[in-house]
Image (cartoon, rainbow over all chains, first blue to last red; front, side, top):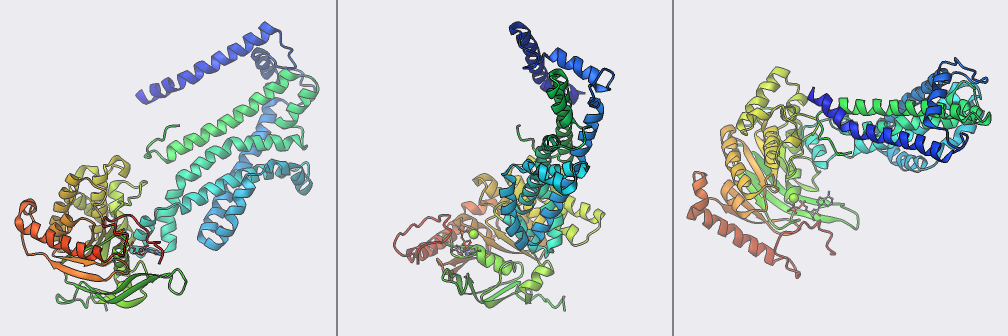
Length: 267
Length: 282
Ligand SMILES: Nc1ncnc2c1ncn2[C@@H]1O[C@H](COP(=O)(O)OP(=O)(O)OP(=O)(O)O)[C@@H](O)[C@H]1O
Ligand SMILES: [Mg+2]
């Protein structure tokens, strides 16, 4: 009970700030008579969201937001899962075969610093414009690098005394990996998951901007914008934000659940 | 092959041991240059000497965590490697080195787990060890919930959990305050007397060496050699001993040996141990 009221209480300031910001947005747009195409009011966005969600109102040929959100969500989540899986597996391989890891890790760090989403049109050419995998591949690659880099760090950042202790027990490399390196890497991995989750939605939508089926959030945003239906475009952005936020919250929940016994580092 | 040890066999026999780091390169560094030392079963031997003289290196050589360059080391009549594989020794370092994702009890049970003990046996032993280091209610806590001194006691419980005949300790109390340190020294003595454990103990502290040891081995600066061995008179090692004149006599003897040793450090003459890594130009 107290834990729940405590959580509500700690979330209260954020909720208040959110409501105040939305109110200020609404008020300022009305006060200064800002044109809808520059910045629609939150209330118009909410109305558009309601109309476009199930496609009850005229959507001018764009798919209902519910369907677009579902499709983009599926691409983001599947790409995320593939990228996370590949990142973890290759991190384990890189650590098990030290030479390989030493050659590959600096390369991965360098690539991670580049705008990988720019590959989207290339992947469209490789895997086909209509294939979902073109967009999934962009998500996969974007997610892979932070997961790989963090997991390798966690697997290798072990205190030398702890490694010596394990060797004093005549433990094999496999045992050391299972008993020391993997548990040591868990918090690093979960941090990378928290970074990667919202990144996956960003990557999916940017990839969708470069073409592909129209039934996804990216094209719905561009189409509505080109029809000057900015309230509908913003409604699609709200849906995309909700997916990203949802995945982030899920990642945080997994982190809390998997590491219940760690001292909480202040956020 | 195994149980060939008998009562007269030394716990540790070190003969003509030489350790050169980076042998054959132009950065070759002789850490230890010809050490002979025999340690009897049940004996408590301390290694003391200037920083960088090779105390930790000697301990790691006994533990077979480093390869020898020359000479030989046997542990209970076997090679150091056989001693490691047979888990003849337990080890404790200056940092407790506990795994923070394991509870205190699970930390103590780790070596037992690796040796294939059943869960019930492990539980029973960790409870017993926690009793021994006076932390009986802390089994379910995590290391970060414990003070530094308590963590160090857990590390000692872990090192002793499988009742090794030999305990190797590298400045285990170095990070503790004076009161906790003395308290831990008393506890360590009680525990090793109880289990009849042989101890090789690295320290920087003269009173610590004088209080704990049967013999104190004073090493000379790098390359490490034995400068002298101070025999500590047999005596009940109680808290009162710390105020006893015999204790001060031993401490003085160790201090003088260390002075003599430090006088041989060329020029600079920094007599206080410093955390040098020994990259001195030579
Ligand atoms: N892995 C290593 N590679 C190269 N040189 C090393 C290594 N370990 C130790 N040395 C060198 O060997 C010498 C002895 O080191 P050691 O750690 O045994 O000293 P120590 O007596 O334990 O010192 P301290 O009292 O400061 O702990 C030092 O000069 C050190 O720089
Ligand atoms: Mg040392």
